[in-house]
Amino acid sequence: MNPPDPYLPGLGDPRYAVLAYDLDLDYTIATNHLAGRTRLECRILTDTATLALDLSGLRALTVRCTGATVKSHAQRANRLTIRFTERLPAGTEITLTVSTKGAPRPRRGPDGMAGWEELDDGIIVASQPHGASTWFPCNDRTSNKARYRIALACEPEYAVIANGRLAERRKAGRKVRWVYVQDEPMAPYLATVQIGRYEVREQQASIPCRIVGPPRLRTAITTAFADQPRMIDLFEEVFGPYPFTAGYTAVVTDDDLEIPLEAQTMATFGANFTNRQWESQRLIAHELSHQWWGNSVTAGQARDIWLHEGFACYAEWLWSPLGTGVPTQQRVEHHWNRLAALPQDLVVTDPGAKHLFDDRVYKRGALTLAAVRAELGDDRFFSLLRTWGARHAHSVVSTADFEALVAEIAGRSLTGLFDAWLRSPALPALP
Ligand SMILES: [Zn+2]
Image (cartoon, rainbow, N blue to C red; front, side):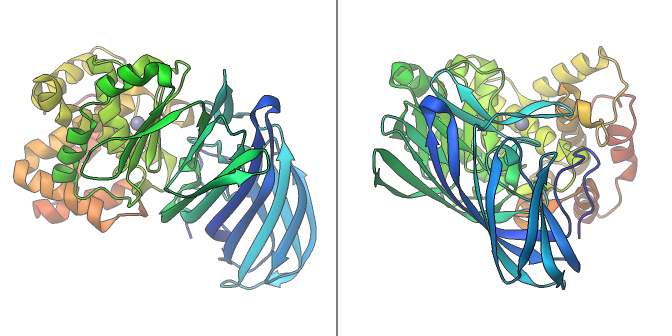
């Protein structure tokens, strides 16, 4: 059983694991009203007569259960606590069905707001790290990956994009109901739905690939995402096979967004990223690479976020020579110089909840990989990345797991290197 995450206080319940989520939701854009029911197949992990779901901003109307008898449920402080008439032994499997309704809105956390959010004319769900509970009751623990089926009905003039493959789309009264199935396990924060007046276009690539956005941006999106198929090819070569059978969807919103964000099998970009500048191109590569690093291979604790962001940032630098002609090592040197000029008061593997997404975690995490590459040589370094992706596909990892694999491939411990790069504030010498 994974311990609670100290960076995400008040989230998740280690007494049980959700095996599968089945969401059946009805949403009205005009009023921001979300109603529906979520079915959760759960396994009890430690004997208990109580368990808690995360649920924020929505009201739980009813709770039903098969496999146990519910005595009562109560909602307080973003938690839906369910009491059973008797203690459930570890190993018991139950199915909870929770109906909810309300006006979903983002939830505040240590590093800002996350979750369901209204755009000018649509919806974005950006849940990292603590926002999943804003649209469905869940056990919001990164380490609790589960299968998902997401059905959402909405006004017919909007496209609804969610994780996994589109299994069904049909008229339901005055609305259209979209059903998505995510076969590979997914952490709750990576579950998403994007709603807008979008057109969905296929993009020719070695995996099923789609680009989605408002028609007014069609040309800009085509141009901006033109290299995405080559990025996929590069990352399959250096990281290993693309991890998800449903392929990849890049969604562009009609609104500008501060930053893009990855979700499983998808990423979402603001209209302001639809150009050929490196600042946009690097992020297109970055979000794509999160399918391997973050979504398939997921840090079990938020403090290990460098295993997502350092890797995704290094992926940008791997793409750089193909995309812009600037060699990877030139990116390494540039960012080492930039970091050298910034305060060195942050520890990569323990940045603190407020600095989880501090750019120094990203860049120094990427530089750590550059240091490992310099130590191992190219052949063993890329073998390391492919082994890391294959061995831990669809599971949860820690920095210690990564160090152990590096030691295995190097034939010796590189603790000194990791101590210097990940566990000491002072910036080590340029790799
Ligand atoms: Zn990222």
